[in-house]
Image (cartoon, rainbow, N blue to C red; front, side, top):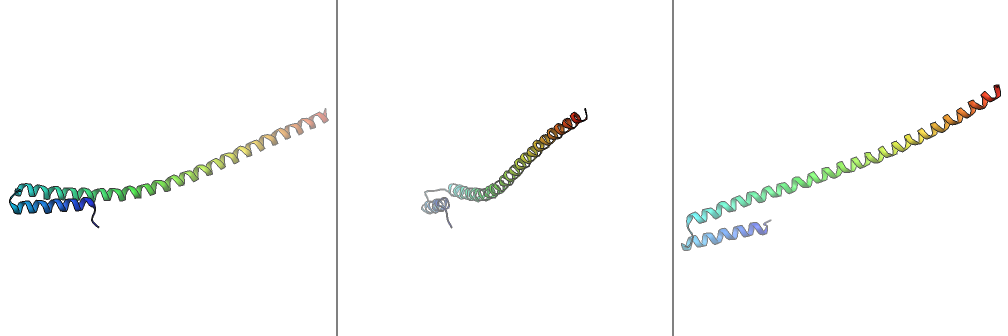
Length: 108
């Protein structure tokens, strides 16, 4: 599938070839156009590879982000659970201290 850029480059080469045939363009100028075309085609290929690379990197980062989000949610649940257990333990200690004080009061 040809892109507009590739079509434009091919058109420039065709025009350069026609001018060369008419004698209105030098061989050096034609060769410069051909070299430029080759360089541009390589750059286009590199840019396409870069696009594919960054698409895959984006997907990888999205998966990592989702994984870390899930870990953060799990950590938050764990912390809330520990806080609840600590509160329950503190309440139980207070209850046992009251019972102990009541038992000491009976002995006296």
